[in-house]
Image (cartoon, rainbow, N blue to C red):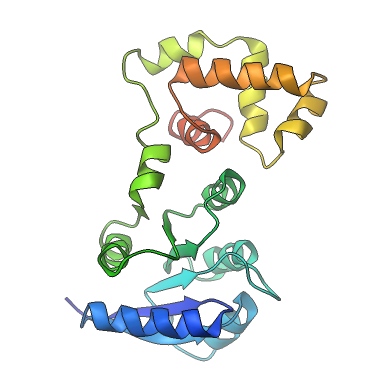
Length: 215
């Protein structure tokens, strides 16, 4: 294996330095070539150096956060692999990253073995999710019925709910847009999850992406 050049973008200096050291210690082919404390700092450095193979990017950063950073990187450096490293495992953050095309996501408390596997997966396969993410994103679909049968079971209101659920709107905002109560939206959510065999909003978005619904 040739050297894998890696960047670490995180505003916490101790964590960033510790992560950089860990990366270089877990595999002799890993080389950290860039450290930055926010997205703009990283983009400025990229103008003056060779593009890394992979960037590990935090979500919560000053000046330019992870979402803004990822959007810029995908436009300017489409061949660079991006792996999100964060403590934020809430649905909203995952939804935003999924819609930005992110295919790699690990927690900041990841163990060294998982970190090494994540980096290798990103370079070799182009994607990596933790076991929890895999459960949410891939293992949410029930295979007892065909996808067409599942979709045929949805009524117009449920399809509209799915469309809005694939946005960044909160459930309260979805209720306002559909002129319904939050309780009714909760009922639609439960019904849609049951009919499609998904377990979370993230799973619903992944289902919509896999089956060409609204995304």
